[in-house]
Structure formats: C-alpha cells, structure tokens
Amino acid sequence: MNKEKITMSGRGAERILDLIEWLASRSEAVSLAEVVQALALPKSSTLLLLRTLVEARYVTRQTDGRYLLIRLPG
Image 1 (cartoon, rainbow, N blue to C red):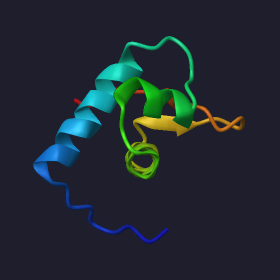
Image 2: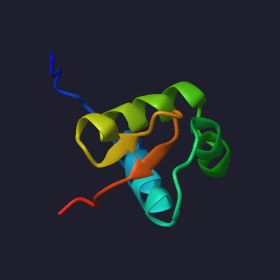
Image 3: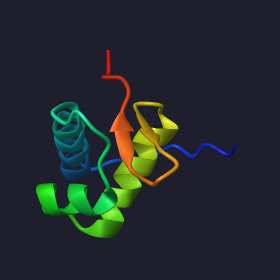
C-alpha cells in the first residue's frame, strides 16, 4: 500500500476531530450519508476524512459500507 503524507489545514483538523467525537457518541456503525447530514459536511470531504481514519485504523468500514469507530487516539 502506498502511503502518502496527508497535510491538513486547521479547518481539516477541526473536521476530523468533530468526526471522531461524533463517531464516539454512536453505539452502532453509521453510513456516509448519516455523517454528512449530522455534521453538515460536503460528501467528498467526509469520505476523505473517513478513508483517512480507516487507513489509520481508528475506524473500520464494514461489509455493508457503514463505518464504526474502533479506537480513540492516545
């Protein structure tokens, strides 16, 4: 797997933290559409954030396409 360094703006960092906190408050896996609606983010940005968290192994993408937080940073 080719790993590229991801650079993130202050806004991007804020969004990923908001996403982690929101996922931590959920007891079940969520769809991309649910995240987009709940956090009022663009779909493309949300997908990128979720993919980043999956690659970093904070989130898992289940076979049905839903996302689940599996660990918190630290």
